Length: 80
Image 1 (cartoon, rainbow, N blue to C red):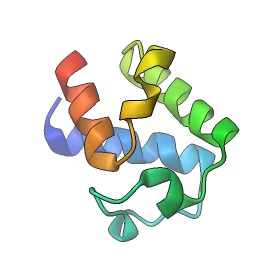
Image 2 (cartoon, rainbow, N blue to C red; image 1 turned 90 degrees about the vertical axis):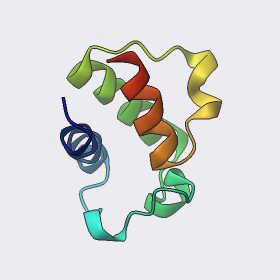
Image 3 (cartoon, rainbow, N blue to C red; image 1 turned 180 degrees about the horizontal axis):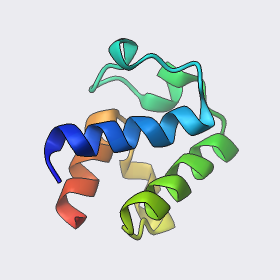
Image 4 (tube, one colour; image 1 turned 30 degrees about the horizontal axis):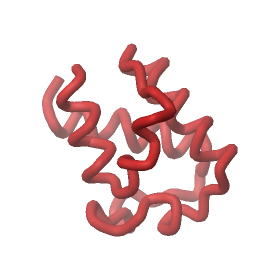
């Protein structure tokens, strides 16, 4: 999977939780939950969606390190 494909997969999972998300408005280095206004249940749903889409386990202990879109992409890239 290329970096562009991974990014598209992550954004697709995000859009299932927050359909109003515009790809071009997302910034890689700003907190993702703040950008998209996700509450904790939405965030968990997003992470579960990534697990289902990519077959990557994301332990709860790792959630705190997944703050920005870049964090999420880096984390997933290392595990695919």
